[in-house]
Image 1 (cartoon, rainbow, N blue to C red):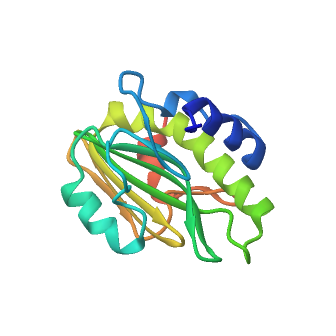
Image 2 (cartoon, rainbow, N blue to C red; image 1 turned 120 degrees about the vertical axis):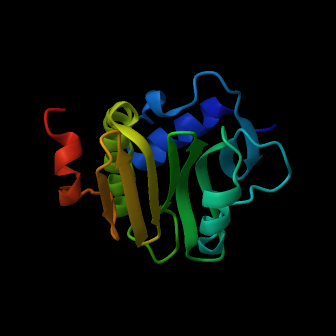
Image 3 (cartoon, rainbow, N blue to C red; image 1 turned 135 degrees about the vertical axis):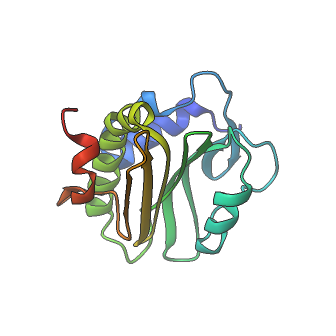
Length: 178
C-alpha cells in the first residue's frame, strides 16, 4: 500500500516528538508520494533535489509551486528531513540531519521540531515584509538572503534558526515588532 500524507504526519509526530505544523503545507496543491517517506507536488519516479549538489539547480531551476516535505535517506548517514518550496516570494531548501546511523537522533529530532515550529511563525512575517527570501540549510551548510520591501537586504552565511540559539541575529530588523 502506498503511503499517504497522513502516514507521513503520523511518522513525523512519532519520530520528531510533536505534530508537523500544518500551516507549512500548501493548502491548494495535492502532495504525491515520492518514495521512502517523502511527499511533493512534482510527479515523477525520483525526487530531484535530495543531495547537497542539487542546491544550485533547485534555486535556479525548480519550478514555481514546487514543494517537497518528508524524510529521505541513503547509505548509513545521509538521512534527513526535507522541507523545500519555491514560490515567487521565496526559495527554501531545508535538509536537516535526521535518521543516520551515527547521528544523535534525539537531538536531531528536537532540532527539526523547533525549526519547523519556528518556520511556521516566521514564514507569514517574511511573506508580508519581504519581496523575496532565499533560505538554504543543508546538513550544516547554510545561507540566507532576505530582500525587504524597503530595499534593505538581510543576509548571512549560517542557519536562519538554530534550536539552541534561536533566530539569526541579522533578522532583528525583520522580526522587530512581530
